Length: 50
Image: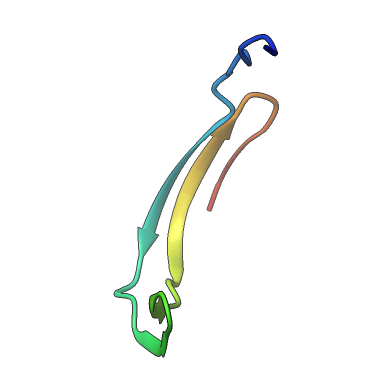
């Protein structure tokens, strides 16, 4: 049996999103496109904001 993986926190995203419009129906459900209006991210090696 392989050893258990060691998981480490990598990133955190905070986003402002527009309402998702319905694009189309597909066999497993509905397809949507979500527009990101702004936000920020925090990553172990890099930080950024809009």
